[in-house]
Image (cartoon, rainbow, N blue to C red; front, side):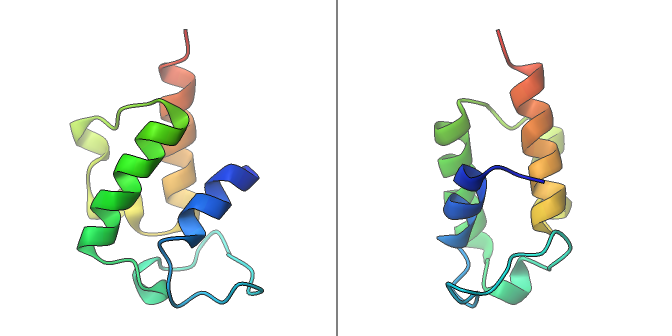
Length: 83
């Protein structure tokens, strides 16, 4: 499961997710209001917060499909780019 920092950040880009609604790993982020502009803004926020850079192969719709997929990609970047 992801850390609280990830969930708090992600929730800020999901206008259709209520504050008290749980965020499931397999929920489609588009269904929760994440659009193309939101993806770009979320990407920048994740890179800044976690001090990582998404590589070209991670910049796809599939990466931003669900919270579970996004966390898996992000956590892999954090591990790969750790000093």
